[in-house]
Image (cartoon, rainbow, N blue to C red; front, side, top):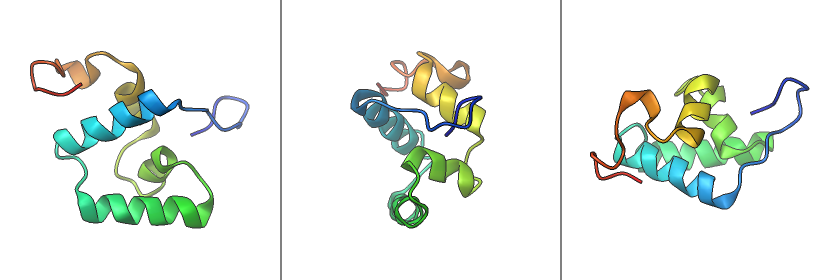
Amino acid sequence: MTNKLNEPVAVDSALRRRFWNRLGRLGIIRQPELIRLHRVAQERRIAPEEAVVALGMLTQDQVVELLTCRDPFGFSMEGLGIS
């Protein structure tokens, strides 16, 4: 992902872990897709979060919402057992 200056956005490890946990628990991504995403990220030298967008699995806005919002998409993550 890039900001308005087209520079890469740094994602700290805690946010990254929460993002991937949410994707898995919501059933948005499964192991085969995860492997494919990481392969694409390595090949293109981009962050895995950016590969999700590049492959059309999520929009950039959805990725940002999953990364930053307490209740992304209006769902209570705690109520779903997701941190």
